[in-house]
Image 1 (cartoon, rainbow, N blue to C red):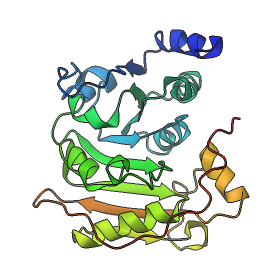
Image 2: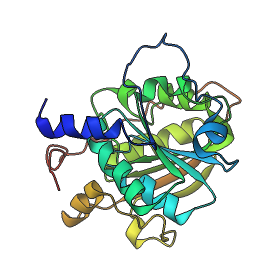
Image 3: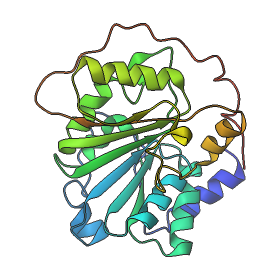
Length: 246
């Protein structure tokens, strides 16, 4: 591990807005904050919204600025990336955002049923070769159901046509209520200040002329979820940009 990463990890241990629990053990004990984020972490009763796979954390911090009456938690397993957003929030005095370093597969160990009102998935890896690794696959939706309030909202913002169409077909297959849907966000009438927030990766995709897609839907809790059997065309371009740095 490089010295820069070690330095960031050490600094994150001093951050009051960051919880680090990178172990990925399905049978591990529930975290002490489960069911207590409002009381012990944010110290208010405002709704909690997660950004899963938050990367550098820019979107989480920006959302927190837009909505001071809501609490945001950016979640990612990559601590060196998350360091940037956590440090930015501290330096800018954004107190309604925190960061959790852990695996999304065990997110139910950190949040109680109904504790989360909304989830954002911003530019997740589409995982075209493995359905079960996709953050919008039904196995992940079942995980989200464990923590989301009834009819909690899932927001997907992506460059990937594959990810967008796969998720849309999953939503249709399960008759989930669509709130917003576009395959070209910046040419649509649903674009607003919140959806105009651009992450580091989004700027890369847009510079290459790739349209940004957005889908928001309610995740019901009332019936088992099914995968769609519709064949989705793969993206041809996933190899570039993922290792780029600022």
